[in-house]
Image 1 (cartoon, rainbow, N blue to C red):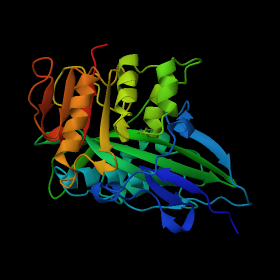
Image 2: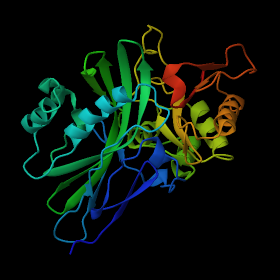
Image 3: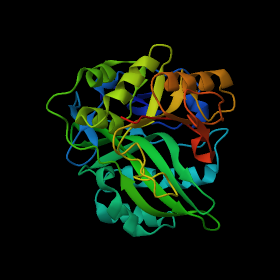
Image 4: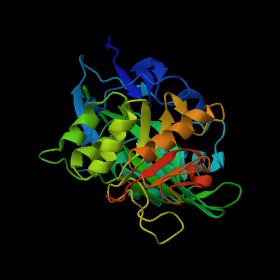
Length: 339
């Protein structure tokens, strides 16, 4: 018998084998307290622009989590848009024996009624492995307009060849355009965190070791690359005092410009981070206490963020327009920094 192992996705426990599934939850599943996986043990960056760490199986054959589809929870803006984006990532990154390779991936995309050529943009979602499964942690808006959208699909992935299970994952900026009966997926932009730095500053090391800060694979690789500004890292550490929180995106996997504009985003230059879950409660969920999210936003401002976005417009602030809201930020708290 293959020994069962435990993995964590988005704060949800996953046992390898048929007994349980991969990350499935949207907001409802995210509402339970997180299991606090240690970011320091999260996968590292690789040259394939995905965070990965090989772990040989303890017996003769590998065992992977079952795939459980992610579904939007309560409070989501245009939930069908997010679902469309997630479906293509799940289809590309999950296959059984005989399903590896680009041609097979093209077939899975075509089965969704989408252009097969999207598989050519999948990058780290298509490792050279006999089997693989993707678990979506969360799907966050990078931007939502009336006719176009960016959905940041944050995922973990396990792949297996023989007796070796490789744990990894990435964040994919999925671009969509309005269409009937369902939105079209027009492009995929997987995260490109870059190689790990030879030496990290103290704040980066502390963030990676802080169990109250849960980082997905691409964000772990961002921090390990040394390309995240100390102001961001110090703010995370300050927030980890009163809060336990899950980050969705830091630097890589985010649009280069503020969606729908030509203004450069603070994310790609390592001066921002987004949070989708606070103390086990999804920001987007209407059942999440207002004071919890608003308090986190104000704490982010107190920690040095000049540009705090979230589901509600807050008053006050040390500077004009320090707080903002729009449809894109109903599902997360954005904290941006000048340096």
